[in-house]
Amino acid sequence: MYRIGKEEIEEVAKVIESKNLFKINDALHETEICEEMMRKQFNVKRSLLVTSGFAALTSALVGMGIGPGDEVIVPAYTYIATAMAVVAAGAIPVIADIDETYTIDPCKIEEKITPRTKAVIPVHIQGFPCDLDAIGKLADKYGFQILEDACQADGGSFHGRRLGTIGAAGALSFNQFKIISAGEGGALLTDDDRIYERALIYHDASAIAFFGNQLDGISEPQFCGSEFRTNEIAAAVLHRQLEKLDGILADLRKNKAYLTGLLKKKYKIGASNDLEGDCGTTLPVVFENEAEARAFAAKVGTGNYLPIDTGKHIYTHWTAILEQRGALHPLLDPFKFPVNAPFVPDYKSQVFPVTLDLLARTDFLLVSPDWTEEQMQKIAYTVL
Ligand SMILES: Cc1ncc(COP(=O)(O)O)c(C=O)c1O
Image (tube, rainbow, N blue to C red; front, top):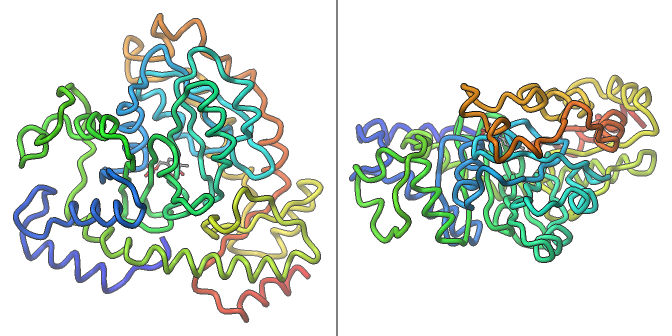
């Protein structure tokens, strides 16, 4: 989260004064306002505000009809929540390596496709857009669905279209560490009515038929699901954050371009599938080896890190997945379902060399939208 202040405080105060904190109400309708804003801002038919990015991913997979017997391909470099969402839907995550853009390698996706591959989750990690053209071609060829994990890329785009709206569905996150935040929160975006309807039912399975007229116009039958319902306080914060989103992105991109200009004469900058759509949060500087990357990081001091040090963002740290504990009880564990068990990968023996190599010899400089040119010159001065 980059910018928060009196606008959010005033909006939250209005909600509290209204004494209507539940998402269905006759007062401020903050949840509905956010969903409407997202539909317009992202140019998408359906949007659903939920409690987290994980909730958005899981609801999307359920909406897409993914479940036991299915494989879903995920990148080796993503937060563990991406893979956990697949397991939460009852399916099996299949891991594929990344390429020099830090995002999933379309060639590696193709190597992993089997008759059971029902979906691929390209993750726009650090706001870096995946190559959705190449992945889209594979989807057409092999008949799988694309769920975009845009949890780290709120508002970014690929060739002019917002991330999260190009595949069958997309997921955003609004937790503390994202481009905009409501403390916690997430959103599902889709043009597909069936995905939306199933996700709507799944995300609020008990209250959906109880409060308001949420099931009006919904033709999908109700089924037992979860409780990922948002609330009006989170929505009030998000309302004001959504208004700030494009300004934040414009300033992030401007500053990333400026700092890149200063550094690129001496340093190699990481590759991108679409620099214009890139969110600008992160400037990757690539080195020949880890020692050089660490020496650079030490010189910069604060506001940077080597991605290899980011724990559960790297498949080697996905303990619950690697050790195949997919649920609270063995009988509920998708890794042990007879329909899944014969093809569960031996995760522990798998090695994804590009992920391990590239992340260890890259330094990520975290860009601020509020830097002045003088501040960026100072940062550059420490390493030039
Ligand atoms: C790539 C990615 N996917 C999914 C998530 C899950 O989002 P949340 O924490 O809102 O559940 C995160 C959160 O950090 C993430 O970085």
